[in-house]
Amino acid sequence: MKKLCSLACILLINYGCFSQEKLTLKEAITTTLENNFDIKLAKNDTQISSINNHIGNAGMLPSITTTIANSNSLLNTTQTQGDGTVRKLDGAKNMNLTYGVGLDWTVFDGFKMFAKKERLETLKKLGEQQLQKTILETINSVTQTYYQIALTQMQIKTIDTAILISEQRYQLAKNRYTIGKASKLEMLNAEVDWNSDKSQKILLQQQYQSEKLTLNQLMSRDLSVDFFVEETIQLDESLVLNDLIQASENQNPDIVGYVLNEKIAQLNLKETKANRYPLVRLTSGYNFSRSQASLGFITQAKNNGWVYGFNASLPIFDGFSQSRNEKIAKAQIDNAKLKTQLTKQDIQTKIRMAYLNYQSNIALSKIEKQNTEIAKQNLDITQAKFNIGTITPIEYRTAQENYINAQFRATQVLQNAILQENQLKMLAGNIKI
Image (cartoon, rainbow, N blue to C red; front, side, top):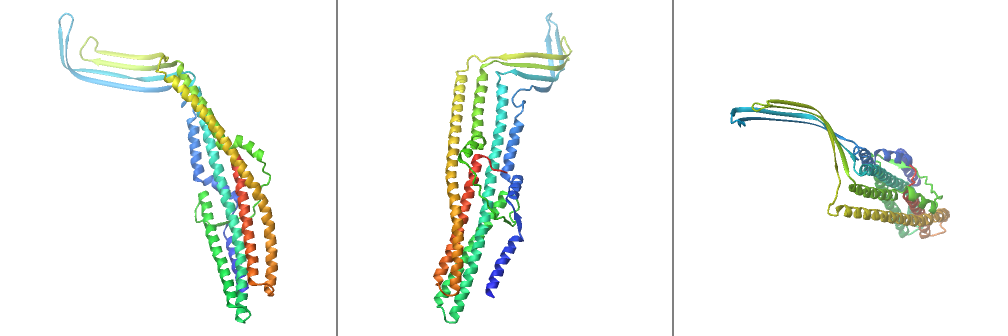
């Protein structure tokens, strides 16, 4: 009867899992792409870069301004004319009013405006790469957390089986002790092992809830949403080292980002060299002016019409600032190239190390899977022998621990293999979304 109660408890636990929301990896990734705050921030930064990428921001368009100015005065005025006549007026009123529209257009700046426009376009692409990096890193975190939850679910089921076996062993030891066929020590040892398994389950459940909180946070949704995940985990064993390295050259956001920074440094040099050329600006406008005076030869004047012209300037000597700025810009190009090479080497090193771990864990996963099957067979045989009293409780417990440890090792190796697989795909920049 007690065995049936224990089995019912496990069934109720499993029923509780299925009464929760089932969350697939695809659903988790889709929700993350829609809600994640880091991705939203990166999208906003990309949008800012796109807005800045405009010909007006590069200085290719004219500026048009409208102005108005009015001045008035009330003065006591005395004027002495050439023939000696003196004219005097107290409280003489004077007024000047000017307004109009003006245009200022830089038509030549040594091609700086074209270099700046290209730099803005490159900055836009750099922002897109930063967004791609954020997406890849976030999706990698979601995938890792999802599979960790799946593996913890599997471990909880394993420990549930162990608890059931430990309880059966305890009940059997208790019954044997009651009828005088076993010592109290055997019963107490069985109870200690049973409690140990239950304690391990509590720790696993705590880890399980923490992992689900982390996934809810990554998806930027209500942290109280409860769910369970699919436990089917398929390793991708088709990854090829050379293909991953080659893909990273063109797809890794860090490498592409530093290549774009290299281009930006080259465009900065173009903008700096543009200062050697003349600067030509066109000016035009339509103005209106009116003035009034209470005293003088002209008491009222009015002007309106077009004004236009140009101005040009050419630097002759600036204290060698131009030469210094060009040398600095060239040094920045060299630094950008070195950073690109350093990043490529760093990414390739990470890929090679992850690939070694990936291959090792795939091999270990196959061994541990086989070992788990052997441990299960050994446990079944040992349990049958224990039930008929041909082996000791210590031997039974050893077989039980071997099965639990084999199962936990198998899930741990599987987790490591999945971690390395996703790490490789992220470094290569080809995580499928």
